[in-house]
Amino acid sequence: LATEASKFIADHKQSPFLVYFPFYSVHTPLMARADLQQKYEAKRKLLSEVDQFGEEPPRKVRLTQDHAIYGGMVEAMDQAVGKVLAALDEHGLAKNTLVIFTSDNGGLSTSEGSPTSNLPLRAGKGWLYEGGTREPLLVRWPGVIPANSVSATRVISPDFFPTILEAAGLPLQPDNHRDGVS
Image 1 (cartoon, rainbow, N blue to C red):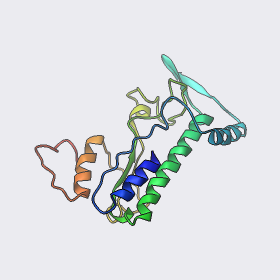
Image 2: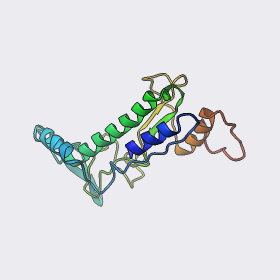
Image 3: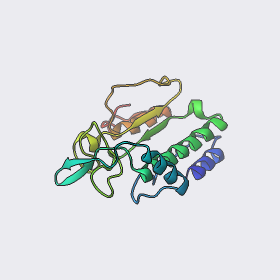
Image 4: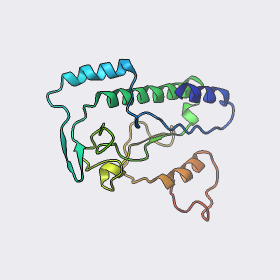
C-alpha cells in the first residue's frame, strides 16, 4: 500500500491531492513478516520479564510491551510511513504538504491476543478509559508547525476537517464545519 500511495503521489505531484492511507498493520489478524518476527523474537529473549498481565475485569490486560509479532507489525508500518514521506521529499512536496498520522483507538491490550500494553494508561481498545481513547497524533506541516514541537492542545477527529480545509486554503463554512477547530 505504501508503494501504491507513493505512486499516486508521483502521478499527482503537479496538482493538489489527498492521500488517505489507513494501515492494516497493527490490526488483527496478528501477522508479521517473517524477518521482522524473528528480529523481535530474538529481542524478546533478552527481556527479563515477558507476558505480564493484570486484571481489567472481565478480562486480563497486557502490562508488558513484548509481543514479537506486534513489534514486527509496528516496524513494518514505520517503514511504510517512511516510504510515503520519502516520496514527498523526492518530489519536492514535503514543504507544502500536511501529513497527519493518528489512530482510531488505543492499543489492543485486553483481547484478540492482547498484543500491546497501554501503560501507564488504563485498559485499551474497546474501553472508555484513556488506554482505549487516547491515540497517537503526529502532524508534519512545514512552515506552520515547528519541527520537533510538542503541543498540549486536545484534538478530536472532527478537528481534522477544518485543519485540512485551512491547509488547502479553502474557507471554513461555520454552518457546515462547526464541530471542529483547525
